[in-house]
Image 1 (tube, rainbow, N blue to C red):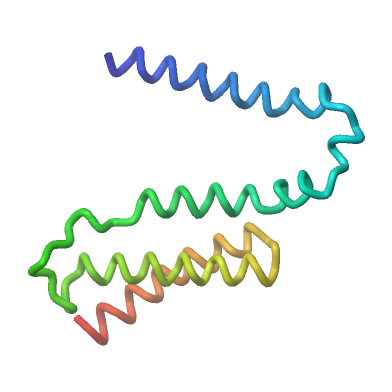
Image 2 (tube, rainbow, N blue to C red):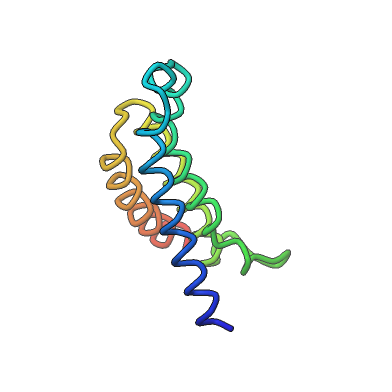
Length: 119
């Protein structure tokens, strides 16, 4: 079952990639130059990145007995702080790579601060 799922997922991703790459050549140029499509094109990478980060937040290990000094809570707080910083940096710079680098540095820095000063 797992191998058939992986094969299906691979072909589905290939089909979506092919369609998204071929679609601009099939759509009239006048439609491609509309302002709403340009705004969508600008915000799409950040939207995908935010969705990926939100789905990977580690809140599953939290419970009612989780204390402020727990490593699980520190990780979640660092992830949320890094996500907010990524959003701010992307809003200011409009550079996805810079935002990703800031996010990686922020999550590591926030984890260090939270573990050393609250842990």
